[in-house]
Length: 146
Image 1 (cartoon, rainbow, N blue to C red):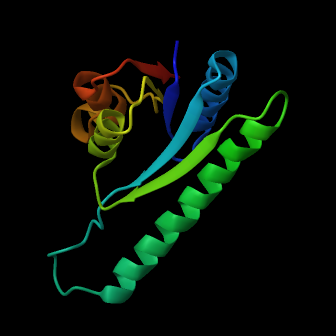
Image 2 (image 1 turned 180 degrees about the horizontal axis):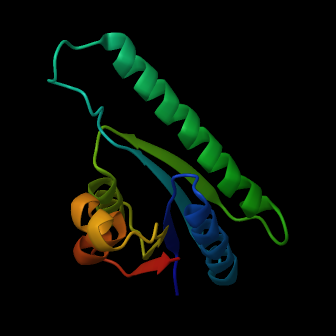
Image 3 (image 1 turned 135 degrees about the vertical axis):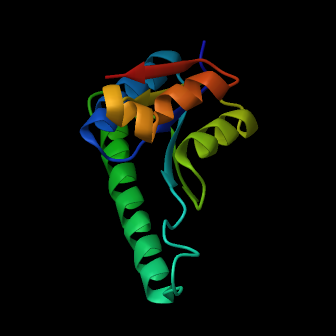
């Protein structure tokens, strides 16, 4: 049923649960799995003086966090069953929801799997929800896990 599954991951416990589910689905359906880490744009551009060291540190930290998140998914792909074909991707300088939706549109994805951080009330109103935006804009089905 699903030939190519997109897992949106940030290395959090919520995304680890989503990763387990995505790997299980990939095994069941013989699907390819793409683990996508999206690094938001550097938040301090245009405020005060531009500090290139701050931007470089931010980019290096994002790459390190992405590598850790991808390593978690890779470990799941190789244990407890037949290995799952995994492609790890890092998108930088784009909002998370937009990066996930654009990847789903452009890479022949059949299903997006992602975790929910479970914000509610005022925090959700102020910060928004990446999962909500992806569900609203995705051209393919989205499975959101708690």
